[in-house]
Amino acid sequence: MSDTRPNAVTIDRLALHAGALSVDEARRLAELVALALARIPMYSPTPVASVDVRVESEGGIHQVAAVVADAIAAALRAEAAS
Image (cartoon, rainbow, N blue to C red; front, side):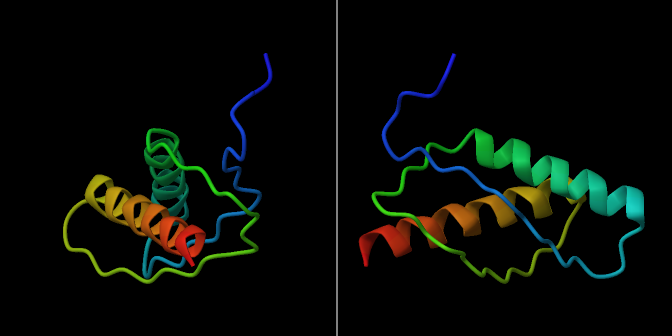
């Protein structure tokens, strides 16, 4: 079944630079960010070429993923509003 919502956000590429993580930790972080983004309703009235967010977060990998996902969602909302 295809997505019939207008302007649903799709992410073609997500690059994360997360310091000194092992390959497995970095892969898990990317998975957790993707899962967190999937739970956030996001729509963009126009295509957005890219957003760049920088976050600092203390805590475990789940908390970092949530902070990253929230920052991406906020950047997309700000881009849509401009």
